[in-house]
Image (cartoon, rainbow, N blue to C red; front, side):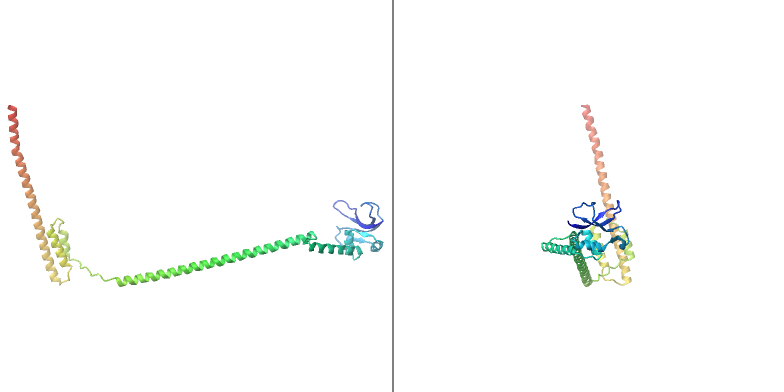
Length: 281
């Protein structure tokens, strides 16, 4: 018969409590026990009171070839009780771990979770590095573009200023002082205001000639006054001649109208006589 060291749950619901027993391997979980070796209370807060074990009887059963369960084996190791089954189990686990790693597989679920977390961390780090790199490149490009735009703007401004300066200098060189136009005297202004636009081409030619003489080199004050008086007299004569001509034309026109009316009056009795004769007939 083979003996096993295993636990038996005897606590109520939500209050676990385990007994550590030496039991026949063929006996069911709640079957007959061979010997009570201690108990395990996981809810107890005091670590010293969680595990109560008779170490002498445990060693006795281990020497007799009793095989502890995995949980009981961990409890014994926590209490410092070493046994060959734990060493064999560790050897088997290390061998299985080396085989799994040789095949590129994970031995436990914890190793798998840790590997996945490390891969995710590396991916996040690579992603963050790539984003930082792209951001730095974009910032550098934006700075370069802004600098190039500022340089181009400054160059355009300097060029525009230089062109404006050249144009200003050219205009200064090309500009010539225009001769001052002498204003007419008050007497000439008055005579021009009195002159009528109905003067004939002769009068216009005389005015043009007189204006040309006025625009000539300035003379002394006395000469200008005498010339102004002469010009006013001439203009008055021209005006009188123009009025006389207009009056003569109007008189000729009125005479012609009177002659036409007289002829019409002569023709009227002749036509009346003809009509009377035609009535008598």
